[in-house]
Length: 462
Image (cartoon, rainbow, N blue to C red; front, side, top):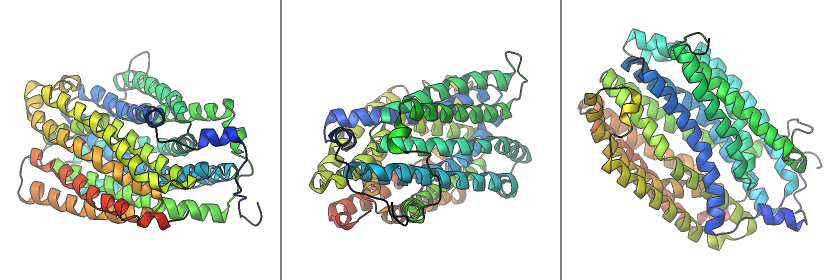
């Protein structure tokens, strides 16, 4: 490396090349997608576990968990945007077989993650109380939410570092190792939820805030586990990770240029979801509690689709790095077919047994009956998402993340206008409000599809 310029000459190792350069086969797709699905499923399972335990405390904690969950998710997706940008770059270097660049990119990503985590913690402690006080109507809800978030936000540092490590594993075709951290995270979260919320095994009963402590400790466990995997599987040695960690302006600028549009895109997306929950809160605790459960179900059943989307992102970038641009669209269509197939199966199951998971949350039959129409609306949204998110992530894989941001801004605009008009102005039922998901995913799909088919992405160089 001279004056901050990385030596990007390809390594001549055939073994390295065969592991880093991907192929368009069903086996390759599933080898990458299934571990990613598991890694996405675990945080969703943690959300559901928290809400199952909180549901036993009554409707109010379950309702407030919707607000706090989306708030934390807002900051979580900032890290996800950074890791996604990093993943695209690592995938591109893997496709090019530029081994020497991967470790430098990862190290710069770690430095950025630490800075973002400090910002998120400071913002939440000092500014979130004023924001929530101005947004929510009920004083008890405000107090509960603020107390919870001041504990919960400390997990963001562990989460960001964990996300950077996941980007490394996925970008270098080692997604199978994601399972170690996610499995342990789930076990710790469930055990601590049981102990801290209700005061079991000699631990103090912390109630609502117990879920926050459990989540922070489980995220620490996940980070520690993935770092052990990186060390003991000699991934750190292979890519020269954690060596000579210093600011590399060229690589730092590259990551920021790639990630900032994604961070803004995901932050806008979750910010609009928080807006949705604030509007729902005006309709009462029951509607808010139902929406929180529906969000859990949406996240749970959307895991496979998001895994295929992440696979699309990585494989598209890798193929472009190999110079296989002509195979990109057939690859997208191949992955999309699998995504739609799994979502269709889920659609059928949800419509045959729409209330099957509701009793887990400890609510009565009237609650379940009120939630079932929303479940049916969301089942359609899952189908739409299984198509649009594949094409949207294909755009990310091309490296032109500014296009992603423009597409997201368009979709969010339609989404927020729909939500505000239907729920706040017309005061229609939340079943109609959840149709906003149809508007959102349809609006995302059309420009994403048109951009990929236009072939303008072929000119983008990373």
